[in-house]
Image 1 (cartoon, rainbow, N blue to C red):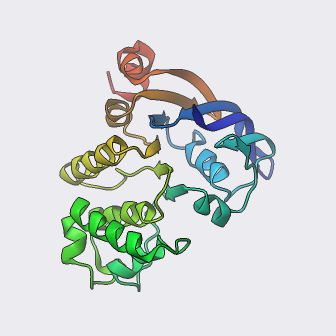
Image 2 (image 1 turned 135 degrees about the horizontal axis):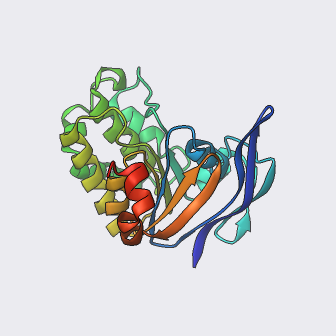
Length: 236
């Protein structure tokens, strides 16, 4: 069953057509990668899915409903969460306050406490630093915090925008191990990532985006073997 469908999605900034009529779908329980060079339109696509940008044309269909241009807060309430590029942590709030902000739409206090404990299991570093302010964390710790905050909303669909950006290789591996674990527990994931090899290794299917268009789609295994993808994105 398709959890998310994009149908002929077009997004413009002034006179620039950033996304030029793309189709994409993500089924319940899948992890799907959207790869492409910087400026291809990947982040713009995510912003349209979660209501930050209003498309010029086309539809965003979530759980069978047309949610094109719906306000972001209503989509969070429906189980859609974004981990933004650049993390966007609240620098003056503590780690724990940041995490609880992720649960602002929820009123199931006991379950929120359980989920907070679960986040601390996933990211022991956050438990150690729960009284520190978000702005004092390292880049990798802030990425953990951004993912943990999104998970506190109890999402059905998790959108991840460039989770490896600016992180040391060891921290990237740790973050992606956690993403795998989250996906294995039933959260559907749409992953935008410049590190194409890593993104395709953890996902089931992939889309390749170039200059606002989807130019290729296949299973991730097939895309990893594709000579065009290998040359353009894997440095081979």
